[in-house]
Length: 128
Figure 1 (cartoon, rainbow, N blue to C red):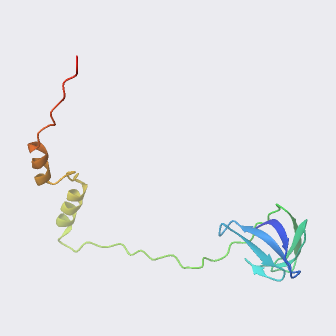
Figure 2 (figure 1 turned 90 degrees about the horizontal axis):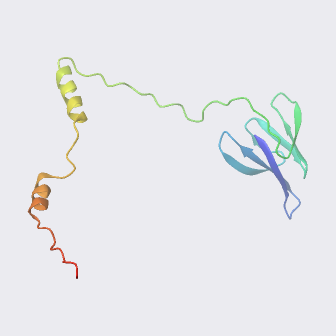
Figure 3 (figure 1 turned 180 degrees about the vertical axis):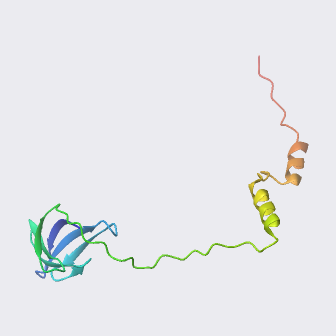
């Protein structure tokens, strides 16, 4: 989390601009907002003050960063279940894999015949 700047809105509210490297975002936060377990206490042109979950506070100058404790993932990782081939069909499965490795022709056979039947365009003779 990095303090990047400060903004005072026309209504007088102050907002601190933070870069969040975990989310790769840059967002303005008002005082008393909560981000990644820390509270934004205050901000001014020179620094922002944040409070950690244990109650300690720290002032960050513009460009100053603080590394926060890792958070649990928002979405659980997908479970991948490996596909087991049926007993007795291993040879067929292996044959299918071998077929998958064969390069496929770039064109269909019918198109290749038509291409071979076309006559080249007549060439013009150079003027002498």
